[in-house]
Image (cartoon, helix red, strand yellow):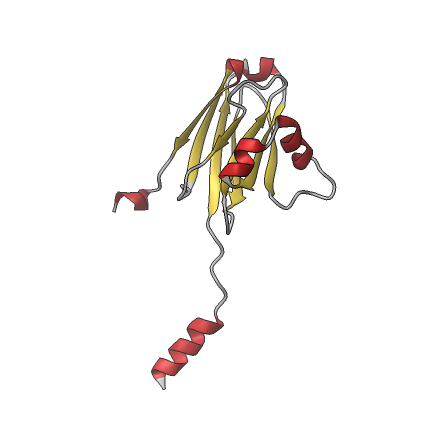
Length: 141
């Protein structure tokens, strides 16, 4: 009876949602010529990531109704450090897009799987983007 009760209890419980993914974004004062810009986080596979243009991503970021793949659109103020979190996607991986006024070659980054719990992003002048994984304490085991 105990085994059946445990089995029924396990089956009746709701699935645990995926953990949140955090981003600490540090933008130098000279990033984007000291002008506000946007940071977009969305689900994407490798093919989508490689083929999408800047204009397509910007259109999805600000579409009405909202694009279901967009997990967050955040304004970035140069010279600040900002914290953001998004839900981890059930499928696919996360793509990061930086909608600079004049995008260079580093306006987008695709994160590898498995996703970490925290990423530190440094944005420099000339649209230079550096993404560092910040592994949680549990990764030491």
